[in-house]
Image 1: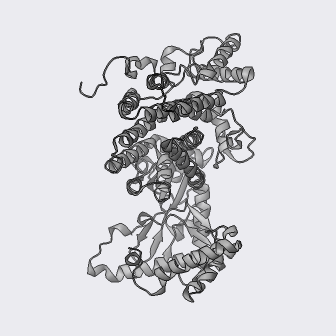
Image 2: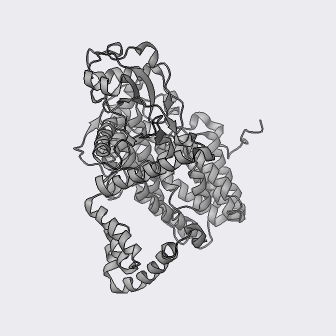
Image 3: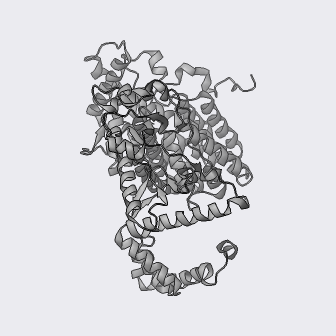
Length: 607
């Protein structure tokens, strides 16, 4: 009873069945009414989920054909601009703002989907909005309104507009000319109809044809994010931002970890950006872990058999097929790994291959439907950022900071998402591992010191990766006691040699060097695992890096500016402008001299 929200007019939980889409925004309602009229003549009452989805798609097409975009984001922005003007004058109707917020949270939109073909029970599942989260949002705004009415009113209005804009962008309609939100023809590779690369217009186009799934995901996340954001608002109103920063950062970490692999990956990317977040948030986001419960063995077996081709079964390939895939030896959000033994005459495997690398293998199987989950979540994240970046701010400092932060997050997301999408292609990882294996074998300084698990290409594809099984100890398992000193020294030397070879010779860099991806084998070799995230370093970049080290060693700090331009760390316009150069070079020289000029610890110097 203590955990239940209070009753009354301010408790959205009072209508749990009503937490379904009643309106995307006020301008959208005429569109939906027209859509229903158009659809009513062409569709009958749906009796199955597929019929309901088809009816929804018809409704959306009809709405678009009647009045164009849904909803009218410009009208929402104009209304918000008027509200912002009132905030600037100190004349804000907090009750009206709360009422508007309540209406949005209590029903984050159903007119777009409430056609005759959708039953009430089906519609009740349209959006995944937690009533408790909605109640916390409203309660936070109500509490803040007592101390900071103008600020509370502004944020309430911003949430209303932001929610509508975000859901509209996920749905593929925005009411503006932003090229990043437009549907375009996609000519790249697809898998079950989904783009396999990070192409936002193509991903948006795919999910715009599935509005129930996209609206449900976006609506639920908006409510949860709003609840967290308004707890920060209460800190601002009470002057406790610094006091509660660790608590709010931990809550943000927990919220991200609950949302799945795409959110975790983006959170990990942001965790190394002190220019975007305070230190408390960086510390908490660095604790994000990629841990989920394993999926079932039956699903794994089905995925593997599908990759083997027609007429080939698991029993044809693995001599322990009946038991090997009962439990994985490791599980993560993208996939999980099984240990199995190949038959001597396994199809897709040459006899010479099994003789050279053994018949005990690691079989990595991708989580079913992971591509759909990841693409939708990446779309939702970007749509939320786009919506936040477009909220009119007036002269409100808090909202200006929100907009600036959202604008800074978008390029970080794009870089992280592009790499993450590559990790979903095990075929690409197989190519990377084979290339890396050849690179290490042909380079004398690391030949025989670095082990790359061999890929059985005949048993690998987009969703399954089969590699030689390697035994050893993870680096995290090697203790720091004096007895292990020589072993640790040898490992450090091998790691440094390996990465210098990658960086300066081959130009093909293993870009995921955390301790879990390295093992010490019984014979002393270093085994490098996981080739889903690699990066190319061009010859010009390699030369530029060597020149940078040479200029740094010679203390020719003025020349290091050109090296940093060639490496892509500094824009060329900065070095080409004499006035800018006159300002930057002395500062750069002083910094580099402090860090590298006289030896000693960098940490001590910077402190």
